[in-house]
Length: 229
Image (tube, rainbow, N blue to C red):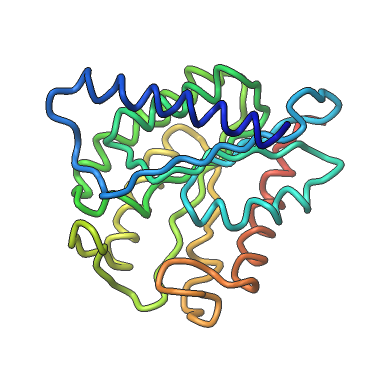
C-alpha cells in the first residue's frame, strides 16, 4: 500500500511538472535529471501526530532513522526532491503533499541543489517557499535545518558545471537564518553537527552510516520537542 501511495503521488507530481512546463515559456535553469521522492507511511492511521521532512537526498538518507527514532511518537513522511527554490514545480510538489495529508510538524531545508542559480536568486525565492508551506499547512509547527557541508569543501556539478563550495553553502545558510529568525521559526544546525568531519561522508556530498546517525539524532530530538502533547 505504501509503495502504491508513493507511486500515485509521484505520478501526480509528473503531471504537475508537465503542466508547469507549459505555463512557463522560459523555465528556470534546471539540472539534467530532476527527481522527486514522496513517502507517506501509516496513511490511514490517526493515533499519532504526523511529521513531514522536506529536503533533498541528504534528508532521504536520514529519513529511515528518524522514522525509527520517532516510532510510537509520530508518523514520519518525506518529500525529498532535487528542485531548487526558484523552480515553481517545487511549490507544486509541496502543495500536492500538503493538500493531501495533515502534518503537525514540518521540518524543511533547501540549499544543496541549484548551484547554477545565484545566492541572490536563493534569497528572493526562499520567502515564497516558506509562504507556500504556511499557506497549505497553516497549523503545522515549522523547523528549518541548515544545509550540510561538503567533505572536500568544494566541487562542480556533473551536469551544469556549476561550482559549489562550503562558502556558498554558508552564504545560503546565512540568508535562510535571517529569514527564519524573522519569522520565529526554530533551526536545527545540521551543518555544525558534521562540519569538520570528513570521516562522516560517503562521498563529497552524502554521508555514511555514522554521519546519518548523527544527523538523524539531531532531527529526531528537535522534532520531538515540537510534537503536540
